[in-house]
Length: 420
Image (cartoon, rainbow, N blue to C red; front, side):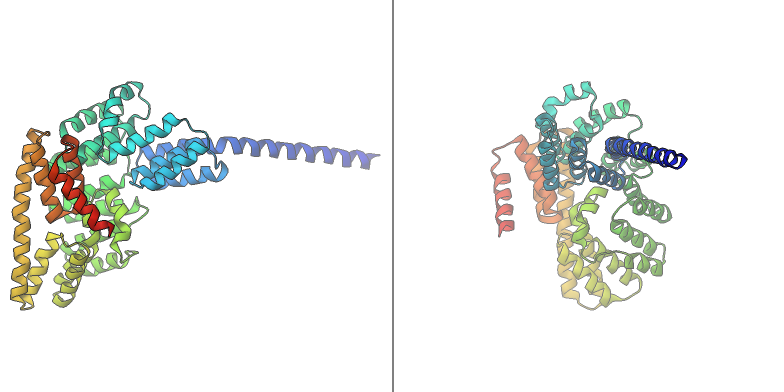
């Protein structure tokens, strides 16, 4: 009888234990996706995109129909200008039962981020009053304003943003970008440092601070910032190339070569997304790796290797005027005087165009509605600097004058050229 009672008691204990495990698993199943949502939101807020994506994917593994996680995934992709992926995530959110209003809200933020700020501007006052999604709303709006050079509006929203969310690093980062563009470098440094004080994982703030230190010939400080950007990035290649550039200026060619050897792709186009996220235009991404290789070869007095590297840079981006100038110097050293002279002429043409562009930018700082000043900038960008930036400026012309003939003709010509 005792044996039977002992078996029965053991059986009951096993049932209780299994029931407890089932309850715990059920609790975990329900709670963990919510926890992932909270962690992903926090990571997005601090601009730690790598951690944010890890939490999003972990949550979706346990709850593939989570509306909140699909919307966060859409937002993550929008931050990187992955608009096709963003729309795919929004479709999944809609299939899971998301309100149409939430889907449309994300689409409006995407439009604003790319310079079409009208729809968001019409709702901005009401959205700011509600205080929900304030950081993402302000981020999309300010980015759009900066893209189409509506500086006054960007500055107003940045001021409100900083006041309402004092621990948010992003308004300080964007203020730094604006100040750097206005060549107020001390203010830009202070802004980037303020962003990093709020989030050490803010890779773009570290990267842009490194660029200013490099510009100011503070190469050790620049190297430290680029290292921080590398450690905070899921793709270290842009930071590694910049670290190599610093090492060259510090007269440490072996160190520079080591950094370049750690770059995981020799196809710079693969790194376009990361360069853009960090704050460099696409045109820089296309030729930067080859340009730094050329600079290292120059330092080592290997003119033939430098020539090859600069030719690769100019093939990747014919509008890279800095590489063109260095290329002309290498050609001269190799005794190719006529070819060098032709490259110098191209370089001088670009410098002359940039001076005209500076004057147009000055006019826009006084009157953002100056359509012809915008058109002048667009021409320079298209011909001398970057077609992708030129397209942005052409579209900004059409925002102010939808019937502008030259802007439409240039856009049509670009579309026809790239559709072949």
